[in-house]
Length: 204
Length: 92
Image (cartoon, rainbow over the protein chains, first blue to last red):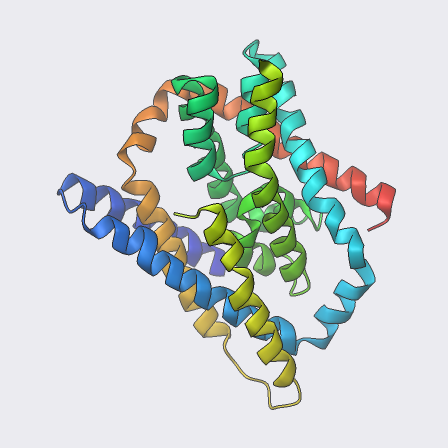
């Protein structure tokens, strides 16, 4: 039920954004994309923090996992890059550019411009779309994916697991996933620009 | 939208929330679930808005279709496979 509200909000948002651009109301853009976006993100993290802090079980479950949560971000980045490698083999396209684009792990506002600069315009566009759709699919499919593996939504979310997809991931799994998902997204956010640049350097 | 510095700042509201939640523990259960849902709706709407108003993004979608679909599917698939394998190895 809640998932449908979220999908409806996303759909209406896309329509409203598209309509505002068509009608030339570009001034609305920074208000929604920056001001309200950032304010609601701050409020959301604060509120989700309160719920987590109050939940005794969530804290004890997290203690059980302990430092092992650090495994996830590194594994997710490696898995994403491997996916790019396999994908490039299937397509018969530039392997390094494909790995670089996939190393973005859902962070499309970074990967689009960065891949465009490093691998050329076409890959900038692909960097945009692959990571943009990764975020979108995580929002829509976190719940069914959690049945494959408890941590699958965190893996899908990649870098976005610390912000936009965090509430969806927690709702699809459980309260104790809050810190795991946030930490994973946080570390991937630090790794992504470094990995994309490193892959471009390897490509020469 | 988010830059690295911007993302790092997100630790503060989360940590503050957890701290406050910790001290509220023994109080009567505070019900903020519907408030959270409201904020999620606003956030996702804004995310949609920034996607929909990004003409550049929407314009390139059709021309890079096949590459995007294959790379997206593979990157999602392997990130899940790797996490599943790592959990088995590390018993996490």
